[in-house]
Length: 103
Image 1 (spheres, rainbow, N blue to C red):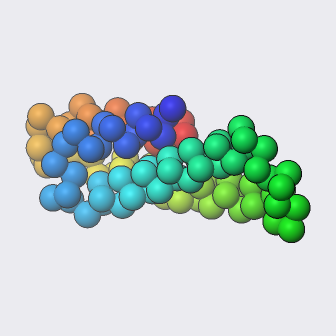
Image 2: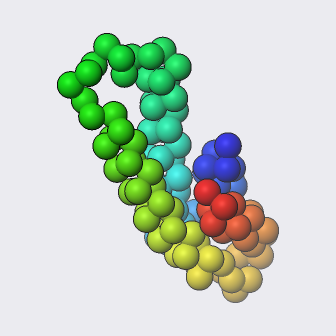
């Protein structure tokens, strides 16, 4: 839910003018899509039909990479938010920064 919030807060602005927000948008959308994908796999119990995949390791790699990339994205987002860039987008970018740290 918080990843979706980060995604929507940035998507409602002119993020494409600033590469830092593009990176945050990429991380938020990428991991949101993967989260929905894994949610569907676990809800349909597809993982029981594919025993060759080490699902514990997949989960560990997914969560570990999400932690590292979301932390980097949150730091980039927080350092890029200034009132000098664009005043009407400031609140959305600040809220996305806080939400990305919670994610």
